Every structure is written in structure tokens, then in C-alpha cells.
Image (cartoon, rainbow, N blue to C red; front, side, top):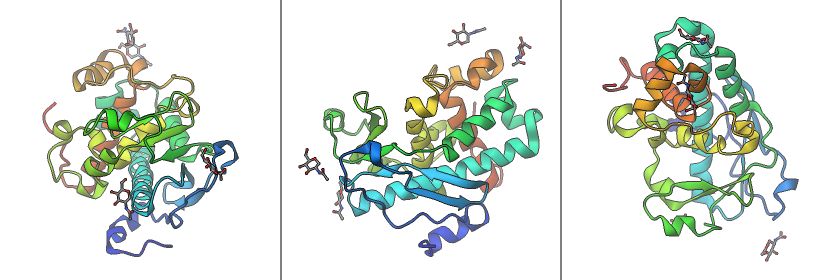
Length: 249
Ligand SMILES: *[C@@H]1O[C@H](CO)[C@@H](O)[C@H](O)[C@H]1NC(C)=O
Ligand SMILES: *[C@@H]1O[C@H](CO)[C@@H](O)[C@H](O)[C@H]1NC(C)=O
Ligand SMILES: *[C@@H]1O[C@H](CO)[C@@H](O)[C@H](O)[C@H]1NC(C)=O
Ligand SMILES: *[C@@H]1O[C@H](CO)[C@@H](O)[C@H](O)[C@H]1NC(C)=O
């Protein structure tokens, strides 16, 4: 509803969601936060998004909301692929092998439609880790406040909209977390409420290990964060760009 710029026109076919205007909560009590955004997104009838804390300024908030919108778009493509092509799909096999499609479907549902009532994004480098890791930390989960994620300035400088997919190199070259929406999904999965107390976790992060899980350890392929991220980037790129841009495995 608020998104009428040409940027969003192209998204209309898959994700006609409209996030509300910047949501900035003026409270220190994250427990009281209600899930701020529950909107209809094609593919997602009740998409939910984290709250954005008052320490995020207008620019931060706009960029975070754009990343949230990308989480919905990229997972909608992933879910649609699962529903239409099932486990015999080459994309599915590449990243999940013979792992359970019920797990994968459940994780996408969890990521997009589970309540995010206390989930908070903040922009104030509360633990000083952004400053301590300049040009390296794009953000981090807060161990001391498990519902909270700090977004560092490096996030805004380095993470790209999904609309740029395939522009700067193959997925193998830049990695799926190059894209703000996909990086954001990985940040969701650091939260115990999202990863089911580490049922889903970062068991392995290199491309080689991710492929090895898919081929030889599918039980863990469907529990490993990066298998999801590669799957989503791969499916998305090949859905919007003829031939996609996975690159050499
Ligand atoms: C939030 O915390 C800060 C510092 O602890 C305090 O100055 C401010 O009044 C608090 N804001 C609210 C809305 O409670
Ligand atoms: C918002 O904060 C960022 C740093 O996170 C800063 O670079 C930017 O200039 C600020 N924007 C506004 C409108 O204040
Ligand atoms: C996947 O295949 C392997 C070997 O072919 C088999 O041992 C394993 O049980 C299968 N896993 C699932 C979840 O079906
Ligand atoms: C699968 O991966 C997990 C976690 O890395 C490991 O503990 C387990 O031994 C692996 N299983 C096989 C069959 O390789």
C-alpha cells in the first residue's frame, strides 16, 4: 500500500505485500512488543516481521523493511518450488538431497509466518561488536538478549537487494548472504525461537560442506542454515533470470 515506486512494480507478481510505514517502537521493553507487521504476501497469507527499535533511524528502517520484504519474496519462490516440484526437483536434490521436505517446508513457514512478537532489530551497536569488527560484522545475535539482533552499519554498506541478483557475480562467487533478505533469514535462524533451540543451526558453512551434506548427510542438510540459504538463492536466481547464476559448484 505504501510501496508504489517502480522498484516494487516488478515484485508485484510474486509478492504484492506492502509493509507499513517505518515501524519504530518507543519502548525499552521488548517483551511488550507485538508483532508489528502481519501482511498478505502472495505465497504467504500471514507473513510476520520483526520489530525495528527506535535506535534505527529512518534510513536504517527503510533498508531493513526492504530486506524484510525480500525475505518474503525469496521464501515465497522457495516454497512455491517445493510445492510444485517436490523432492525429485534437481534444485531440491542439490541442496537437500533426500532430506525431508516436511522439514524444509516447516522451516519456511516458521521463518515467514511464526509469531515474531518479541523479535527486535536494533541499530545501536549495543555490545560494541560492530565497532570491534569494522567492515566484517554486518550484525550479530545478542547472547544476552536472545530475541534481539544488532544490525551494524556494514550491513547497509555491503548487503544488496534481491533485485541485484546475478549482477555482481554468481551465487557461488558472492555467497547467498550477499543479499540482504537472505542474510536476514540467517539472522532470524540465530534466535532460539526460530531455530527450535538449535534444531536448525550453522553446522557447516563452506560450500563444499553444504554440498557434502546434501549428498551424504541429508539429515543434516535440512538442519543446516547454509543449505537453506543456497537453495533459496539458487531457486530465486533461476526463477527471475533465465538460466540463473549459480556458478560452478
Ligand atoms: C529507555 O532506556 C533509556 C536508558 O536506559 C532511558 O533513558 C529511557 O527513558 C528509556 N525509555 C523508555 C521509553 O522507557
Ligand atoms: C542513519 O544512520 C546511518 C548510520 O547507521 C547514517 O549513515 C545515516 O546518515 C543516518 N540517516 C539519517 C537520515 O539520519
Ligand atoms: C537417504 O539416503 C541414504 C542412503 O541412500 C539413506 O541411508 C537415508 O536413510 C536416506 N534418508 C532419508 C531421510 O530418507
Ligand atoms: C552428519 O553431520 C553431523 C553434523 O556435522 C555429524 O555429527 C554426523 O556424524 C554426520 N553423519 C554422517 C553419516 O556423516
